[in-house]
Length: 163
Image (cartoon, rainbow, N blue to C red; front, side):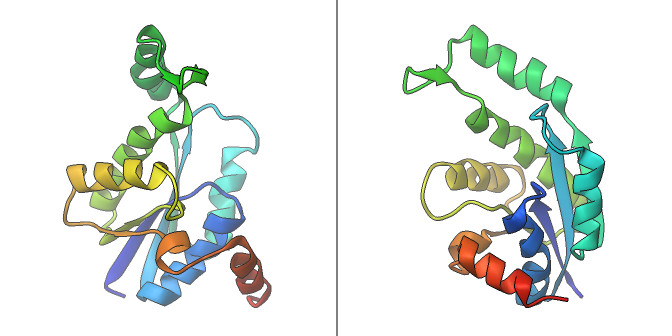
């Protein structure tokens, strides 16, 4: 395969199913990249292994907790960065950090594409894609939910059709 997709991997249904789906749609190997930003929940080794079990050729977990806290959260708090004046920005400010590590992984692992799980609605797709274009405009961007009209129901149906 000449294509290699570096996928922003959360470990959930959508990104897990996206591994084999992207592989088929783009005739590509998929490298899953998950970031530990201190979000808690599932053990990151389990997340890493799930990506491999779903068909990723490589699965990388980046411990980015300190980087996120020091370089993204602290400056945002100091600037009183609030979402619509209601609550502190967290999710939005994580996107440039995720992009940074995805592009780095693409460059280190021969990536031709980067992929994220955003739909065609909302600002997250813009945050990801402007970051990708800024850091490495040669990478092709794929968003399965948007580009292939991927819905949760379609993801479940696709998963049920797999081994």
